[in-house]
Length: 453
Ligand code: PHE
Image (cartoon, rainbow, N blue to C red; front, side, top):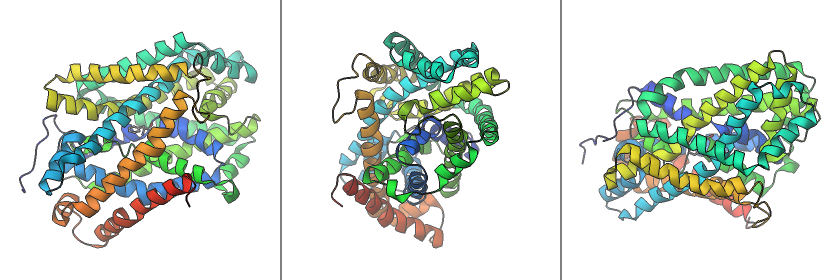
């Protein structure tokens, strides 16, 4: 079959629009909240290097595969996998790969929305000047008392989920595509300013050293798995978000170029976030390993001290909210596309239904910081488990299966046609990496983490 499919959901207006949207999906809390706190927990430079290695050897090749499958299937990930499998004479059971992605999307969005809710709260805190007069301890206390307050957390979680549902309901092109064009560059500039401020503190040298000097003794199997999981999480891979965005990509756009651009932009933002945050951690004598609260206690201290901190602080959390928003819509899109295709439900209704499911799942995360904080499994709260299982298990597993499908099972002709790279060196390198390096890498890291290797 060589006739090209059309997506019933529409198409990006250009290659550039796709890059914007996919970068919007990739750049989010993963870069600014999660990357620094994981780096702090797993020992700095060694983690950063492992992370970059995972992006290059696993992330970029799998991103190309995901976009390729999406554009060829031109449907929700579930139906894309079913049709492509059928086309290759394989079992339609491959659609369960799409289903796993939809489930992962719900689970990720459920806790993502809670953290995005903290960001919302911090817009109000920064806006009302609360960080200007507070001591370092008082700033820590602002965060702790937010976590102790389930009502406030629920309110913010609800507000953020509503924002997500509204945009998905409207269709991605009209609202977000336009907004992202201004907001992403603005976030970038503000982050540069923050790095500039960090350079002026006396923790800068120590921060840079911490971020880039690998102390291999700190690296564990667990840390390795965390780096791999973070590569998937930050690049939005393994659950169909990039696949569904790829299904709206115009036929003539280069998959290799767009994927590399997106991955580089995402990695640059993460490194900048690290450069903005760790110098402050050292300058103010804070703990690198303080977990998910890291940016919510370090950055407000900086905003409290820098000139025009109230304006910068408010602006920063607003932009972080937008970064989270452009990511959360991509978490919902695979499920919504499927509901529209298979259940004949309108986009607006589908978005509301899917958002409700994620919202309910998120209640557990809200409570895990207060009423349920003692309910633990392997010493992890509900929130920790959601975060761990999705990013360290479901996304890499999804990515592994995507690599196997594209590189081993799909006909060479279809792959070549879609990638449009010919059969030259770039193509052969890519094929080698998705055939061997990425899948074997994921399996080794899995085995290593559970103590088998
Ligand atoms: N990449 C997003 C971030 O870094 C999170 C995300 C994960 C979005 C998976 C979509 C799919 O914040």
